[in-house]
Image (cartoon, rainbow, N blue to C red; front, side, top):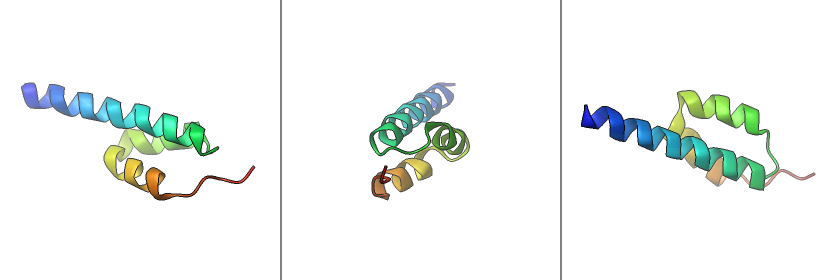
Length: 55
């Protein structure tokens, strides 16, 4: 049970971080949220590595 709770907390933290990073890099927040729902920490690493999108 405790493992499930810790996993859920990590998943929510990754989701929130992906939203913040996508906003700061001028990327589609909705797309990153959908990706983050399925591949939370992997998408976080990819999102961190990508350069900001030019406006």
